View 1 (cartoon, rainbow, N blue to C red):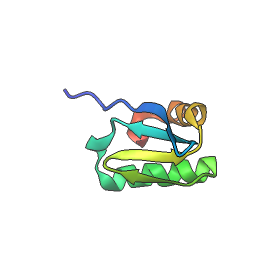
View 2: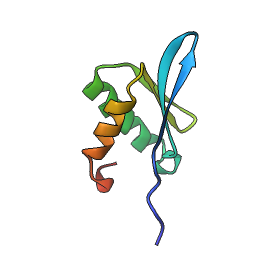
View 3: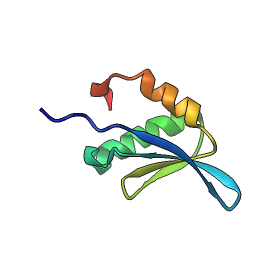
View 4: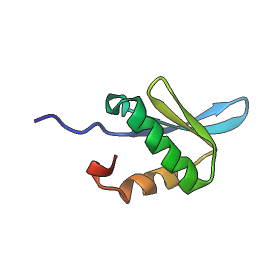
Amino acid sequence: MGQSPVAKIRLEKRAGKAVTMISGLHTYGADRLNGMAKELKTTLGVVGTVKNGVIEIQGDKILEVKSWFAGRQKSDY
């Protein structure tokens, strides 16, 4: 039986600004990633996008993103 992918959350600096990157979920497909990104953006009140299978959220939101994932069941995402 295959294992569920594990989200890898890291912080990058771009032009002096922080971007929270969520990778490792590319196997979920574009529609599911876009849905997750939309929910994260709404919940956190930030802007973001999905590029090349990576969810990018504006700002240093690592703790908030980890909390969001912790509050979800694997079947939810």
